Amino acid sequence: MKRLLFILIFCFNIGLLAETKPIYEICQPEIATYCQGVKPTKARILQCLKERGKNLSPACESAESSLSESMKAKSQGFCKDDVSEYCRWIIPGGGRILKCLFENETKISNQCKVVLNET
Image (tube, rainbow, N blue to C red):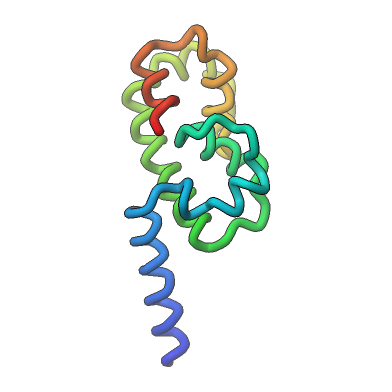
């Protein structure tokens, strides 16, 4: 029973940590391993971790998941037209929509570029 309680408290604290600290701090070892040379924006780091990240720590996984949900909400609002125009054939998941937007960065709207370049 104590073990279950410990696990629940640990998981809850990881979720809180992911919401309060930036992904750059939480996933520093993973970013150093998988994302060297990637422009340090939230979207680019997220896309890199989704595409290349293997064996992420529980804290980094939680941070990646939280950021993913946040980015999805922002991109659906600010990048919806761009996704419809340039990425409509892309199957969502694994950072593929972000990758498509990056590949079309010169063509997408300024409001979507702001979302992609948020630090």
